[in-house]
Amino acid sequence: MRQSATDDFWTFEDDLAYYRLVRGAHALEVFNQSFFLGEFGTWQLGVGGVVVSKLPLQIKVARDAISESECPVWTGIRNVIEALVIRELTGAIHLSDSQRKFLAIRLRSLGESASGARSWKAVKLLTDPSGRHLPLSALADYTRFVHIPEPGVLACAAHDMDGTFVVTDALLDRFGTDSLDDWLEVLSEAGLLPERYAVVEAREAMVSHAPHGLA
Image 1 (cartoon, rainbow, N blue to C red):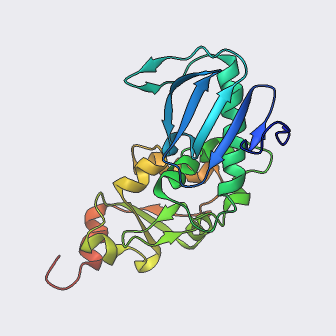
Image 2 (spheres, rainbow, N blue to C red; image 1 turned 180 degrees about the vertical axis):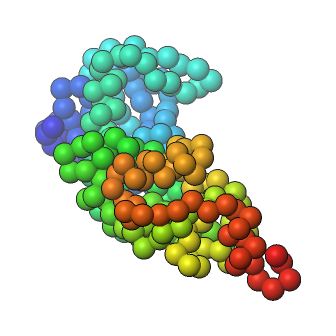
Image 3 (cartoon, rainbow, N blue to C red; image 1 turned 180 degrees about the horizontal axis):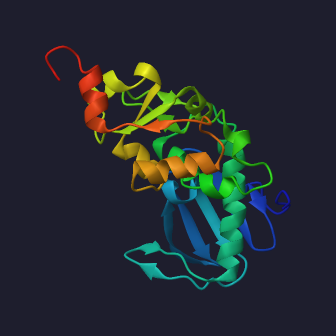
């Protein structure tokens, strides 16, 4: 990859495409050479801006948006974009919900990378029931995990009590998981959980820590 020598408008240029990455843009617009194809939301690619391919793309267009394909040119372009975005976001002070999801759903593959998920411990991809964002390293301090779908009063009361971490539906969705067991497996494979931990039933956690009158 090299800095574009043709026009300062472009952030990067390589043999596959021209890339203009724009912080705060709502979507990434994709051009098949000179023809506009559609756009990807920031939760899909983690960045907004413009990409113009130098080679023909073979990807599908449906409902004014482009979808995945087996096109080797697009695969290469997407890999470049993801590498650029991951490098930028892991060092960012603030992340949007879309950016957190972009990173979180890639955690499993990051554990297989050269740097590994351990280098991501400071990235705030967790959100507790009160809405506070926490780094992945915080998981090492919890020994009990419970799934409570909604971040209500009882979930907030149970969280942080007796080493309990409350996982909501929103957090499961962020990591692309369907259950607490699946979520724990992803985090365990990344080496982010303590050596010993327990899964707690939601009823047990909420009754034990419910404010007076709410149990």
